[in-house]
Amino acid sequence: MTDSPTAVRPERRAELAAGLARVRARVADACAAAGRDPDGVTLIAVTKTYPAADVVALAGLGVTDVGENRDQEAAPKAAAVAAAGAAPRWHFIGQLQRNKARSVVRYADVVQSVDSVRLAAALDAAASDVRDRPLDVLVQVSIDGDPARGGALPGGADPQRGLDRVAAAVAGAAGLRLAGLMAVAPLGWEPVRAFARLAEVAARLRADHPGAAALSAGMSGDLESAIAHGATHVRVGSALLGMRPTLG
Image (cartoon, rainbow, N blue to C red; front, side):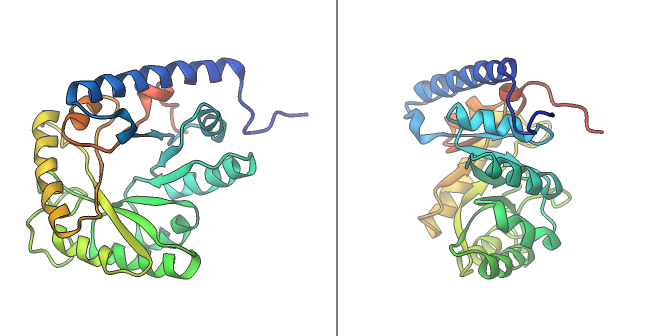
């Protein structure tokens, strides 16, 4: 008889509990330094490459939100976690191809990586077809405006990737709800500089879309700077779950 794929070893649960305590302490300290309520910051456990058992364990420890980067891993993992009786809120945070939209909207509660009008349209069509409520969407923004990387372009006139165009496409879609912005600090940028720039972009977006209050920014290495600049969601992997397993 083999163990269930979602069975949690006691020693692994203890490791996750310790990691969670450390991350929650960091979030609390960062909020205290910024004069913010820790309840205003949601921790997203980024579980790519980690097994469904870790997600089940984290849910049992009180983690409510989980992030995944690849549909081919996330879809079966979400199904296994649901079968085990856990029900975290799933965030899709990786680059998303339009042909994966129909799969992603079946399990994701939030898609954080929408950066083009075309992708917004694909998600809208899929969500309207298979969901009974709108899909929450964060527009991924390029902080440095480099068109070679992912992210909608602030102030850009690009009809597909200009931030205002993408935000308007999401806001106008019946199957989607514009919830806010997501960003990653660009390589080579100090986090303080990156997240200060992001805060300015977010303020401009909220002027046009007051309901788009979510700001997903900050990871294991820079969550303090992100919280200082208004992040409402931080995406933490290694600091919570340990070093990633080697992909086979």
